[in-house]
Length: 126
Image 1 (tube, rainbow, N blue to C red):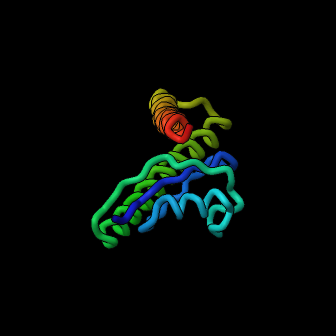
Image 2: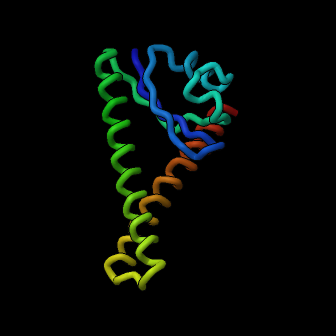
Image 3: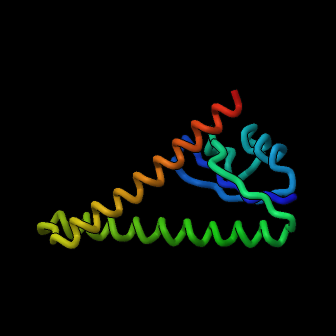
């Protein structure tokens, strides 16, 4: 079995996406600060994971997740930044206000989902 997983840093509030053949061992390495990419971002929490029969599938899933996260993050950040910059010099249009509201709702939904999954994981660990 191969696994694609998503971690969330409680320190910098960012995600890490990886894949491995030994999920428990890899998570342990992350939590002990033995992984270069996450050692300065502790504490971290497992948000979710998916299992695959083949390594190629897990690698492809990781790639897709990276691409989707980057795209969503870039889009949201760009829109919010542009709207906030222009909003300081003039009033926001109705469309811009709706866009800001929708983007904030999307971010809130993502944060709520992550918090729920973290709580569920914490319950499982106990």
